[in-house]
Every structure is written in structure tokens, then in C-alpha cells.
Image (cartoon, rainbow, N blue to C red):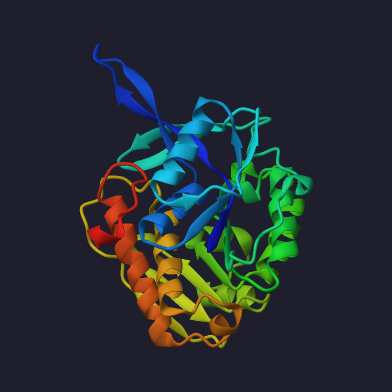
Length: 308
């Protein structure tokens, strides 16, 4: 099982009312939630570890996970509120206003975390859950405790306005990068993590030196490049589709990449250290295909395997 560890929240999406004024409709979302949904729909045995509320929105999230065949046995329930993200879409691109104080997801501590069963073979971390404390410290502790013998993918998905203590965040992220096998960063993420005036290739080399076996650099319409620890790389183009919106595109890309590696039998620490160019390219191509479906329709709505 691939266990996705991080935030699940409610995206409040603008929608016109019958009287012509704009209202908001609650949609299940969150970067890590989207990746888990994407994996479940692609037919991969998937679970989610997160903090969810017992309120009506938490129940909505649980229902959505189960509907996409995502195991919820590692969900941690509390009576704290659900995180709400009010979304504004401009030309298909989303901006957010978050309400996350004292939420069920953010307030997780290491003591809340369950012991993972041997059924969990891989871990995925990412999203704002890596920045918002105390939950961020809980996920870092989980990786340290459970990641030694499991394949680990990390997508920092940097949101600078969520980072309250830059030095503490950088230190925590450095420790998590060193324990990860796969790192996915956008060009913006990479420039935030390493702000020095260096080329992308030089920055990628610096990140790989920290320990990962595979690094993926995504550059929007320019496609994605996968780098192996020996410095060699494989590039795949972004698939051309009529874009409706970009919500969940990167999260679905991650699901497609993990799903293909899982299918190929390569989602293991030992295998990732010697991953072939052919397998890397196949996984990246599949990830781009899955993400293309998501951006071609409204909302973070990953495709089911049959749609591919």
C-alpha cells in the first residue's frame, strides 16, 4: 500500500447562485488528498494518514476517500474544525484564502500517529502539511520513524506565505529530503529551496547530493525532467490539451508517477537506487498523461484508470 501523509481540506469554490450573485460550494481537496484520490482511481492500493474532523466537512472528506477506494484506517479523528480554503479562479489559475487555525489536520502531534502495518510499503508526503506546525513536525517524525525501509516520495510544494519560521522550515525540509528516495519540485520550488544564482542543473545536483535517488523537475508547459543520482536525465513533454484549470495538476502528476512505478515493481528503495532510464521515462510519461486529463476539466478531478 502507498500511504499518503498530509492535508485533506475543503476547497470552497465560487459558483453563481440562482439570483446571479456568487456563492461558494464545498469541494473535497488538499494536495495530499488529491494524490491519494488519484492513486485510488488508478487502481493502486492506497491509504491516507491525516487528521480529520468529525464535523460535516470531515465526513464529506471520509466519504470522498472511500468512494475512490482509499483506505481510511490511518485517519486520525478529532472534534477540531476542518481546514477551509476559499478559492478564486482567474484564467484557470487558483489563488487561496485559508482558514486553518486549530484545525484537525494542523494540530496533529507525534503522539497522535499510529503504528504502521507491514502492508504499507511506500510513503508519500507533501503540500502545506510540511509547513504548518505542529502538524509539520508530526509528519517529519513519522518519516523518521517509518521511512527507513519504505520507499518515500516527497513533494515540498512550497507555499512561502505558510512558512512562519523560515529557518525551522528549511531545517525540517532538509532532514526530510535526506530521507526521501524521490523528490518532486517545480521550478519555483527549486528556486525557493536554493535561491543562489545557479542553473537548474546545478541546483538539481545539489539536491541529489542530499540523498534522493530520483529527482523530478516540473516546468509547467515545458514538461518534466527526471534526474537520477548519477546525474543523467530523461525529459518528457507536457501533453497538449485545452486547459480548463490547473487545480490538482501537480498532485495528479505525482499519483500517475507513483502508480506507474508501483505497476512496474520499482517502488522500492533498492530498485529506485538503480532505476533505469526506460522505467523513469515510462513513469514520467504516464504522470504527464494523467495530469493532462485533470487540467482538461474543472476542479481537482483525477481520472479513473478506464478513462486513460
